[in-house]
Image 1 (cartoon, one colour):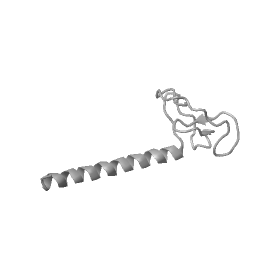
Image 2 (tube, one colour):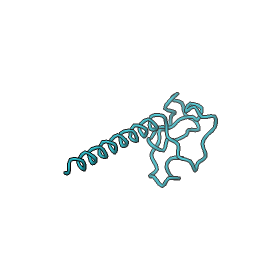
Image 3 (cartoon, helix red, strand yellow):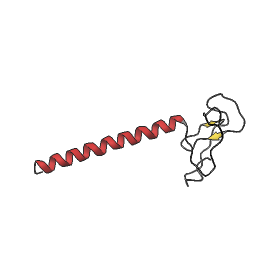
Image 4 (cartoon, one colour):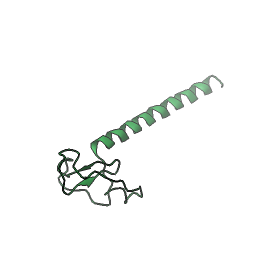
Length: 88
């Protein structure tokens, strides 16, 4: 993959698997420079080139960003309601 399907810039990926530190045919993360054998990434087969694939670390980062964004939006909505109730 490597980012071309999503229009993102291509990254200069590692030449060794981040899990086993061996070379060979590697699957490149679309979120960072890590690369993995698809088996080392826990995949039964490589994903289609047209699909974005991110490693577990990047998935965790994205999930954390979504959670933080959600909390921030909830806080902003609560502050807006409070301001409206208090006539700010």
